[in-house]
Length: 284
Image (cartoon, rainbow, N blue to C red; front, side, top):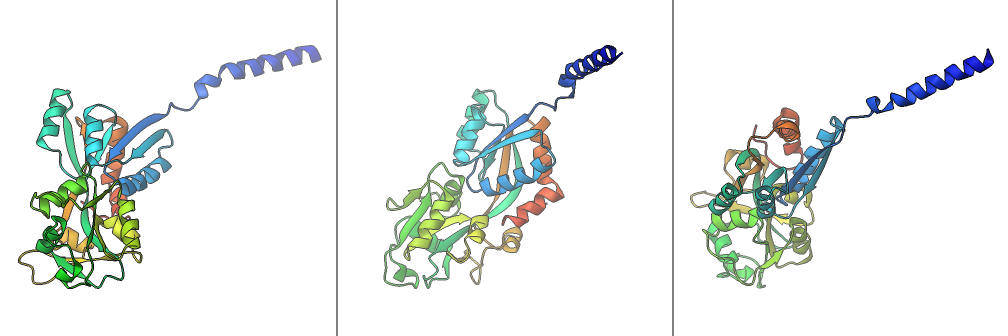
């Protein structure tokens, strides 16, 4: 009887092992998001929260600039492109040639903030002054009410959507000064300004909020405005702060499957709450 019982136990154990594969967890779903450095912090925050309830999804988030993300969408190496500017006509044409059909989805708004060293006495600049500074026509802080010291121009590199937006909307499409130092990421700009009293740079609203205390935010006065306006969620949302813009996701065709689930979350009340908490401006 003992031998029979042992045999039954072995059969049960083997049967249990045979049923193992049917109990395996669902395969991991992958999602890649590439593009705007301005949006990396926001997209990472969305990703972290989304994956709390979607353990089966593995999301990769990388920066490199809006141009890099758009190129990745066009050549099929990312599922979602994060961009702080709209696609250019030549990019749309190239996408069509590659049988890629980009769909633009506004997911947040952002203000481009001018930052200087905390000890710089200048508190605000006009749009015209910014254009003259960044095109190299003004080179000393004393020309805008500051100390007699050279202005160190810091900028994002040309693949950045922030670079393109700033050039189009602040410089009126004029070229940046040849003396402008181009840095590869927003964090590098913040660090450089914090270390040099003569420096000026432009960064996203969220980055400026994170760097509070190490850099100073300038007010900006647009043509026709009676006084400078400081960047904030309220002034960006109302349009009072002149240097602001929408932030986009791009997908190849209408988003579906995991990409749609993620984008739907980003646009949901919970996702838009994260937008505000990370220093950006909700679209809804």
